[in-house]
Image (cartoon, rainbow, N blue to C red; front, side, top):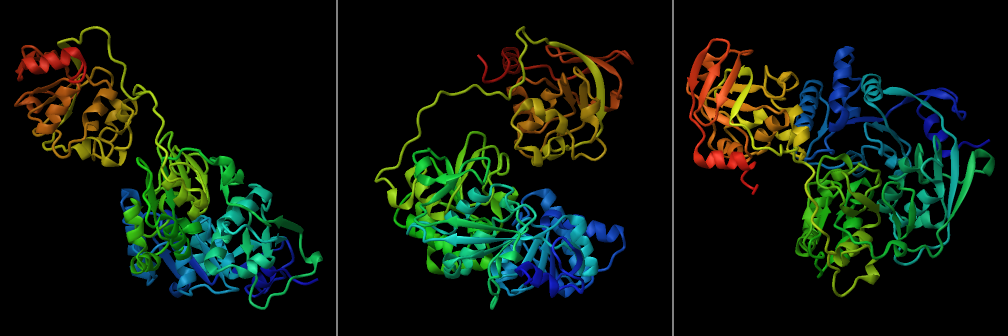
Length: 584
């Protein structure tokens, strides 16, 4: 029996028989780790004292978080850079773009080769007739160290695209239709060979779009034919599948499930808040040219935002040379640095609760790109929908965009319950002394948690990044009092550095002095603070204190000593008693 395409590739990379379901040790031509997971790969190698088999066939790609704008990503990237310097491993850094596209465009992987990466869409390499596979940190560490790893030879499904799609259908529409036919697991554990007249006409960019969504069908890989490869007799295949694309119109995937696909016409009129063009599926130059053709001379509908992220820096620069970036900017779009963007939660492309987005990505799982509802579509459909303000096709853009429907203002759900009675001017609690000066707001409430808007959730992050006090938030009890040094709350203006103590139900902060903005923030949110010049010299953790906000007298019930602080001013008292500056 003749071999399938996947068997041919495997056979050229192992000495073992490649019968279906056989487990073979496969030579890996190129192995990569991304900033997401790369640091763990390094850790595995170091913990097990493993070498790097061949640095020339090994690389790091930093595509999840171009710019290192997330501190955890920045740390991981630095770990990988240090390791790469020591071992002579090439890096495609934060200015390069998506790793899977870079290895194709730079000729690092060619037809018939094998490639592994910590990227679940590494099987996009099927677009050039190569074997690519996404793997976990342990797998990649093994491949780094040995240049090989084990695989089970998968069965193959023979897929034929039948007919010619409508003039306004694109490769994205074709693969969405295929995803609908297979479902989320219809190709589970299987390779697929794609055939039919449509596949022979595809450009490389179109092949990359189609191959990129194999993972969303459960497939090991979607393979376009190798040069000189001939179609096998049917007994070589595990299954056959014919997908009728004759006259196929533009398609769209409804939120939550990439396989929940229908025509754009069926969703036409759905109001959108935002759009995204990019990802490994549709961030190629052809994709951006087609989006620009729709956007040229037009404006994004009022109140909407369109985010565009080219797949690689070379594509970004080509857009610059061709004037595409100017078209995007003139239309009102935001253009990001090359990379994965919102799909990896590391760049632009995230959504807020209730936000409706139409995106060229390959996944729209609930929570994948934030809390919004994400539709998947082609670049043309995304561009047209953002001009219209609702989901539509490029040939049905209205002369005037839709406006947002009026909706009633909801009450915020983030504030803590406020007591119905008048707040007490006499407080008592156990003291926690933090004997340091100049404790800044990053130490109090780090900027990595600034996206938290619910005050009730903030308390757990109090002092989370402050060395020596990381566990204080778990120890503090309601009513306790924080005692600290000079210039407490210096630095940024973040309100969260006050609200986190409210979340913990701390009753009072006594400091030798406060940062000017922090003092205002505390007063305006009706959170009690007192200034006492020698507080940390006279109070010890565990002392029980009483404080009179009117007189400023603080009594240490353990030592029986009085400490004079600055009492509440009339303005401070008024704001405190009514529950905050904004309360009536």
